[in-house]
Length: 378
Image (cartoon, rainbow, N blue to C red; front, side):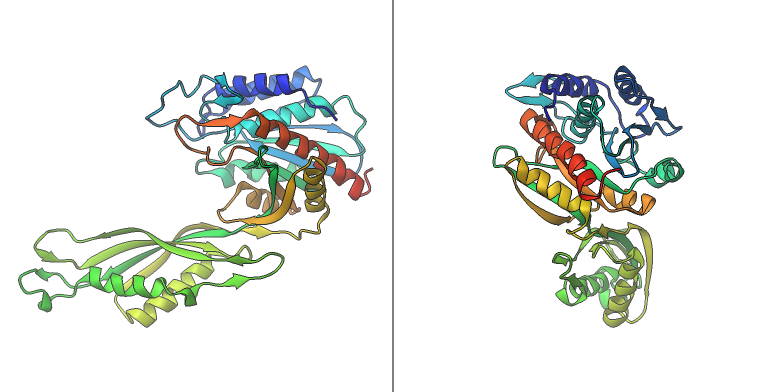
């Protein structure tokens, strides 16, 4: 199946020219709707500017997803972040790679498939608020509007030059645990009469750095956790022994574990290292997910990449990804495959290689067809 590369590039440039920070997706959602209507498809837009459309018919249904929003451009750009400039096989601008490449790929795939007789139904879901807070609330209403058997997120990178393609079948969870370590204030000329909260926090950090607190899984793929102290604040005055020290402990958890598990482990370590004089609470977290590499959607993606001449393998993402929420929301297996250029998310002078988007789109289109074939079609 051939994809219209000129349409893909032109559409990507149009998308990049429209600023779409979190809670600012309305204009880009309207462009997506107009593109779908040009294909003869009916699109629904909800109050959060999530866009839903579908094509084909049959009992088997597969989801195709990318997010509409981007992070703000920030400072330090040498080009207009909303130029959509095409130069030497790259499209430049904020969101060119993350994730308007995925949106353009979805529209290009829809344009190619809309005239074909699909042996199943393809549900297109363009989501908002992936980059900012409020994504759970913004997507809660989608549960009753989307009914699918499996899903594909276009929110990962691909290397078309070296012909390498990861098929993401899960991700680690995330938890931010706040710890307040207490001490006793006193004049710094006689520190022995106080209790230095920063020193006590150091004792806790030393224990948190021990690999003993990390867990590991081997199946369906090997995954190991990591824990990092990402914020520390202590002391109020240069001549005062600090009586309080705040720290944030960031866990990257096994896909099967709840953020509450991170709190439990911090409490265990703090009880061992400090015994008393501390407070621990969960600031926020998100559970990961993992599916079997042998599931039909994962097999469909791996076969599609290999058919396109790529070396392909299943992996679990180290960071939390949007597919985890969609997996939980719709209760179906979901994979993430790439249309992005590696190293280009959230950077100044962001770009995406056209070859990466085009090859990722081809693999995604073939994954859809493979899934219908593997799962029995209609």
